[in-house]
Amino acid sequence: MTHAPRRSYVDEICELVGWQAGDFRPELDWTTVERELGTPLPGDYKELLTRFPSGGFRGVLTVLNPSQSTEECADVKGHNSELLEIFGDEDLDYLEGAPYRLFPEPGGLYPWGHNGAGGTFWWITDSADPDDWRIAYNNRDAWHEEHPGPMTSVIRDLLTSTGEDNILRWDMAGKPVNFSG
Image (cartoon, rainbow, N blue to C red; front, side, top):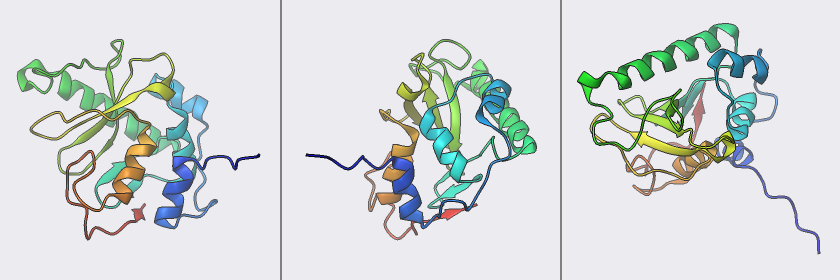
């Protein structure tokens, strides 16, 4: 008996938001982006951002696309460096009591998205294989439970959530399921 291949989370996300293949073409290749950012990146992230420009999913999660253009790659690199510097400032206590350290330390957190309300989505870079990285989320007040990943599963879960059963713990009822670039 032959089974149909499992659709990827990216395929599901495209279907959920009505995004068509070919709606976007990145300017930079991933080898260049990874060199600029100083880290390998998960395959699902690269698959997603080969199809989508920088933008927001359901108005609750924004992902910037470093492959979109040279300027966007520089913006992502600068934004991530600034965020890592802020979170590393011991006077601000962002990591006080949290079981995390920051990239480039082994297993350190590396940002990949934000919610626009002071929350950040992070990869926990504790595996040599970026496809095995788990997800952490914090808002202004606290660190929330981890998600096993991948990041596209987090996005899919946010798009399909109809209540507070999501990593944000926000009531998603009534929020349009969409992407805005």
